[in-house]
Image (cartoon, rainbow, N blue to C red):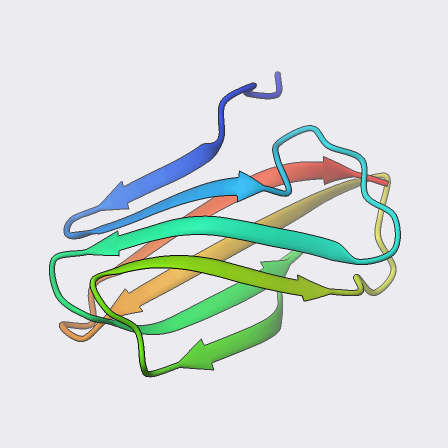
Length: 103
């Protein structure tokens, strides 16, 4: 079962809503990510995972609300893949959200 709404997670004070690449979408070439991030204190780090492997990480310079945009070429995509974002705020509170995408 693939959700039709954007994937979101709220863990304590950190919220992630993945708006693009959406759940159930087919990927080819670059994967484009767009997500809304929100925290009660400044966001300190954003991590991007593809099938459990860390493929990108950014740190610093984020406020409490952020529109995050990132793209990367996936290595060895499978027929079914897990794309995840993990957000850490300055109080070391974390949230993770993910979507299943297809090749």
